[in-house]
Length: 320
Ligand SMILES: [Zn+2]
Ligand SMILES: [Zn+2]
Image (cartoon, helix red, strand yellow):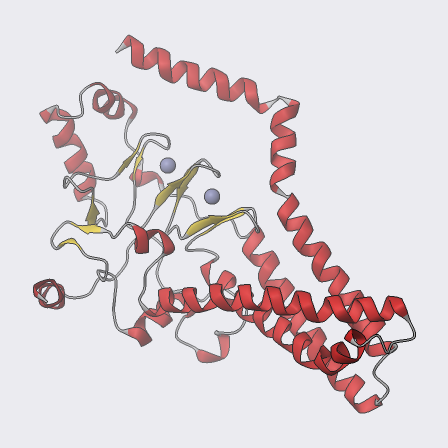
């Protein structure tokens, strides 16, 4: 018992000491580098497209007006979704999921103790929990000292349990979770459309620039890079978007596609949260279609309690 206390105390002392270290601040600053890179790239694309391409190359005034209007709408939507994905922090796990200190201490000393198991079972029975560990026990997070809600997982980077955790994304320096998953999928959608638009409008001029028929060399390089980078990033966004569309329509997270949930009643079932493609889509995007494409919160539920498909359907797919 004393060892456990000693170990936990050591962890506390180390974390308290490391909080004030300059290297900790450097580490936190480093985590923002991918975000800074992404914002710099979109700033350059703005300058290259608006100033170099539309102002200096496009001669037709009507085309210029259309290009600039569509470009600005896509850029605003893409950046709004990006910033909302970054700054929407995961929702905290409510207090009722916390394990009392004495129960946790007893659990750490002897997880198989009957009294401890009874106390945890009693605690778990008051919570909306349908998933368990592979051995059938409650999913406990020793770091956060709580019973994990369904679909919640501990993120080692954020150092906390995250509701409906999809994955931790270094490009947004945040966890993709219940609170920002819709914004993330929308960001992929707008970013792909943005790249596709730049690609299609610069393509004729890219061919000219490739043939070195441009008098202005600066302008030529901007057009070349606009087309090449939008093609490369467009392909990357398209692949990611396709994957997440599949996840949305199957009501599955990235984490669950590699580690299927174990249900208290039905056992391991990777389709456990499947409600039908349309209902799955509404779980993330909500019910009113005019709000689907807007970066506003419309996901259904509270992030703690999720509807599952009927037991009959589970058995049918299990017997297949
Ligand atoms: Zn945790
Ligand atoms: Zn995280």
